[in-house]
Amino acid sequence: MLEKIIIFILFLCPLIFFHELGHFLFAKLFGVRVETFSIGFGPKLFRFVRNGTEYVISLIPLGGYIKMFGDDPLNETEISAEEKKFAFNHKGKWARFWIVFAGPLFNFVLAYVIIFALLMVGEKVPEAKFGQVNLSSLFNEKGIKLGDVLTKVNDKEIAGLTDLTFDENDIIKTIEVDHNGKKETVAFNITFKKFMEEFIKYPPHFRKPIVVDIRGNTYGVSETKGNIDWKRSLEDIILANSNPSNDSNKSNLYLYKFKEAPVGDEDITKQGYAVDFNEEIVINNKITNTNLLNNIMDRGFYPLDLKVKLVLDNTPAKKANVIPNDLIVSIDNKKFYSFEELREFLQQYKVGKPIELSYYRNTTLHKVKISPDLVQEDDKKVFKLGIQSAGEFIPMKFINTGPKNLTEAFGLSFVRTWEAFIKTVEGLKKLIFQEVSFKNVGGPIAIGKVASDSFNIGLSYFFKIMAIISVNLAVINLFPIPVLDGGHILFIIFELVNRGPLSRKKLEMAQRFGISLLLLLIFASIFNDIARYIKF
Image (cartoon, rainbow, N blue to C red; front, side, top):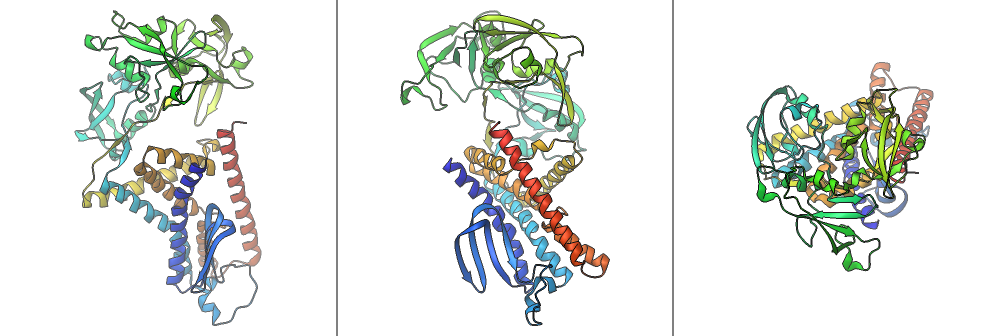
């Protein structure tokens, strides 16, 4: 826990520092006296005074502030003509604009510098891999399968997702995919925008090599006797051992039972599982059936994601008496190889005609009639039973790219910073117009989790996420909400229109509205964090 807190602080503090540094430097540039430069809020942990400015590190690292002399428009205290030279509110509109805008500007600059540095040294980026492709999708029609890796688009080499930098109106004519070691070229004739809209529907969520039997016992699946490679997904094993044209791949597979309770540290693998390698089940894959997973399921072992982890209240599954640890095997006698296939099948449900759900509980097969609920999920309606899967997934694979040259890095950094800006604006627009649920908004816990996860993947990815959040911070601060930088810029615009400062009453009302709205957004995001991670 302490490690995650430290990572969170290391992630957030540079963003806060550079934001406040922008305000500070431009205030100094225009001759405004800076009284306090603070990183964090609340009780002061460390402070020193230099050249009339108090520099502070405070307890709560969720923001920062610059206190400038004469920056409170509601302060009625008279100041002398000499002091007005150093007062923020007595500076011209252009000077005040740049002082306020400098905070977000420095966040954009920080993002650019981080991206530029990453391009110069090489990045660790997500592999451009296809996930569970829908049977009715354009990709399936073109023969693209789960686990295929995108290696070229229009003859351009694709090392990872960050190389997909085409214009949205560019026409994708061909792509090259790596299908289990074999390169295949696929013809297309669609825009890059349409291609990416289809591509992101199928994220590479690959299951850990774990299966369960109808008694509730859990097993690790391995291609090697006496060992389990936890970096190899169940999909990898299936693809490598289900190729009818390569009989050399068809060999025995080994299932090793998880122990109910660890005997000692030596029994626990790096993944945290206690496995008994003495209790071995051999699956002979040298048979005519080319679907390895079907062979395993015929022996009574099912993928872990078909096991029920949680049943939500007031849902069809709850009313049908489905409980955690039940093992779903079919719907209307159709067998499923993954929870994702089950979810996809549910979307074909015809209202008014209940489905028959079959599941094992303590070796007994149960069959119940059930009618899925139609619920709103982000910007679409989907059928759901109210079940959460117990599936466990392997983290996305990341690969190292080579360094770019100076000219290429210089230009591409602008492109990626601009793309991050556009995506942030589009995301906020969808949120405002309720195209996506506010439940997707995360607070400090969500940011902390992203920081910790990205740090565990690698420093390059950690800094890449920092750059994206820096752009997010800049855009959010430019929102025209009083107390934010965008609100101050809005007041300056009003002054131009009003040909003078706003009345005290209007400023007070705006400040109260801004503080109330900001507090509401903060509490709402924290509530989402609690609901998402503590699950009360």
